[in-house]
Image (cartoon, rainbow, N blue to C red; front, top):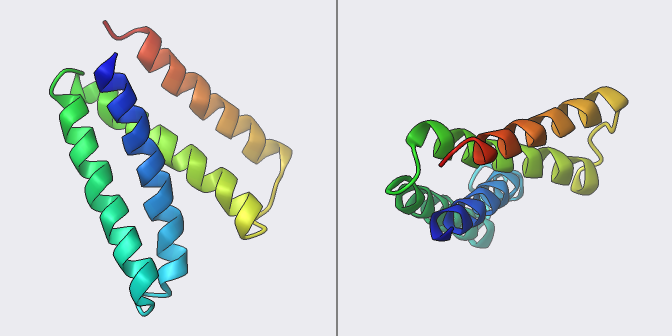
Length: 106
């Protein structure tokens, strides 16, 4: 269970650094750049720790899925990116896939 919690936090940090990239303005804003860099490092470290116990074929796609879902949703909320039925449908499918990987991993 500990490794799944680490993986969840790693995925949330991935969302953070993906969104943070927008705020760095090409790494010209120091505070946003440092925070984004810390989120990248933290996300990778936690993914690595989770992968010690979880299969990498599960850990990596779950990590990417959480990050992609979070970045897409926050992009819609923070940056007024399009909210369309198609995007919502595929984001739901992405979360179904993430939950399916968790459910089928011992």
